[in-house]
Image (cartoon, rainbow, N blue to C red; front, side, top):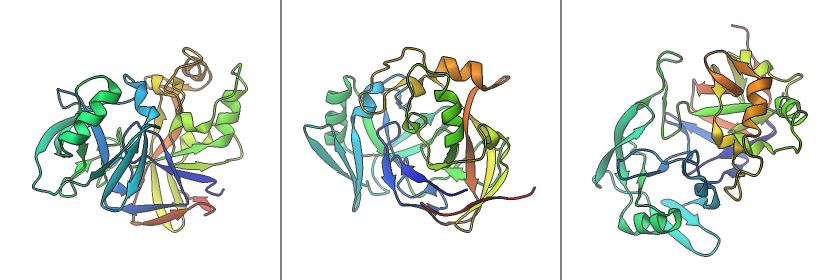
Length: 265
């Protein structure tokens, strides 16, 4: 297999940015989900409940990030480590994050329609992944793990069950490959891409986010494709499954076009 495409998500739940190379450091993919919107209770905000997030296009710039709503832009610098910190919550994890300032909060609050703050992941914070599935690995503002790999053959199988096909962007992958059959990725436990060892740690359970058009924020097919995926490919106790969560076991770079090898356990 080869890496067919690669993506990062500078701001959690905002639009993707296509890239030719994923750079990996101790915390995960460089530039991936190092920024996040939080609500008044300091909880993470995602397109599950605020699909309008996908109408905002982030772009990494030197020393920060730029947000674009199609009519205006806002550039935000990475806050210094002595900036105001909030104890933010992502699912069951609570940890400190750096506040990005009042201007960013006001800009986002206006566009999203509620009071929110913009935060950056602090380089001196270590957020462990779920130790029930992987040890000695960390991540940033992702839901749980630093990388997600998906299989085009699985999307083909799902699209065959839908009245209209959906693009892979609905599943917000980092790495896209094509395997010889659908759903084989559920069993991938050890891989290597561009010399970087990767552990497959947990098949990715899916939610209402995959019903959201990643350009408009609309949900044009109602419960589809989630309802179809639930019938087609579920794991008892976990729900609808699409893709495999990965942790990397070395820093390095994974480039589009790189060979992805499956390793024997």
